[in-house]
Amino acid sequence: MIKNFAEVEGKLAAGAGARKVVLAGEADGHSMAALEEARAKWGIEFLAGDLSAAEAVSLIKEGRGDVLMKGGIATGDLLKAVVNRENGIGLGGLMSHIAAFECPNYHKLLFITDGGMVPNPDLEQKAQILTNALRFMRSLGYNNPKVAALAAAESVNPKMPETAEAAELMRRAAAGEFGACTLEGPISFDLAISPESAALKGYESQISGKTDLMLTPNIAAGNILGKTLIYLANSTMAGCILGAKVPIILTSRGATTQEKLLSLALALTAKN
Image (cartoon, rainbow, N blue to C red; front, side, top):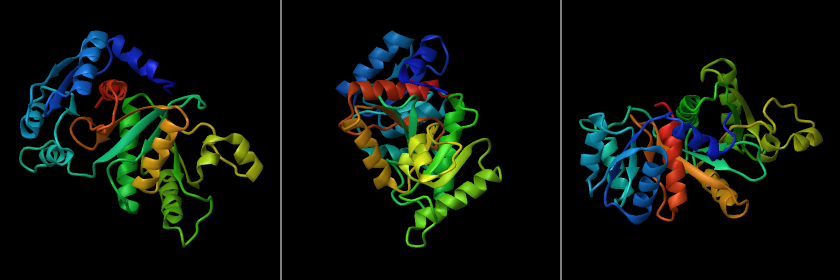
C-alpha cells in the first residue's frame, strides 16, 4: 500500500522503476521543467526536441523509452499514432485513464478510473477499464486492491443501469475474473470512504475506509470527482493513460509542473 507521493518518489530515488521518457511534440515549458527536475531528482533520461507523434511512438516501439509523454501536440494526433495498426504501440484493447490522488483527509493514495478517456463505458468496457487499472496497481505493489464500483445507491435499481453493472462486476470479481482484488458495488462514495457512514447505514463492507480504487460509472462522474478533490479538498493528483505498450502521460492543458512531475513518478515506478 502506497500512502503518498513521497513514497512513490522514494522508490525512484532508491533506483526502482524505469528511467527513459520520450516527449512527443514541442518541448513546452511545464513538460520540460518536469523532465529536468525528474532528471535531477531520479537520474531519468529523456528524448525531446519537437518530435512528431509518429517519431515519438516509433522510439517507444524500438525500446528507447519506458514512458510516453505529451508535450505541445494535439491529443488526437498523439493517440492516432499510438493506436496505428502498423506502427503504433496499442495492445489491441481499450485504453483508459487512471488518476491517483493524495488527499489530506484520507490515509493513503486514492486511485480513480476512468475520468479522462472513455465517455460512457458499457459493462464490458468497464471490465476492461478495471483490468487495466488493476494491472497497473499490481505493478505498483498492490497485491489485492480494494475496489469500489461507484453509484449513487447501494442497491440495484433498474432506472440506474450503473447499479446493475456494478453488481455484475462484483459477481465477476468474486468468481476470480479479475485476479486478486476485493470489489464491492454498487456502493456510494461515502460508504467506500467512511466506516462511520457504513455503520450508520447498516452496510457491511470489507472495503469501507480501505478503498484503493474507485471505478466511476462514466467519464463525467470521474472528472467531477477528481476536480472536486483537487479544488475543494486540496488534493494532489497524478495520472496516465493505460492500455498501450507503456504508460502515456497525457495531462490537461492546465496541468502544473508538479502534476506532470508526479505523473512521471507514478508511471516510471510502475513495472510495465
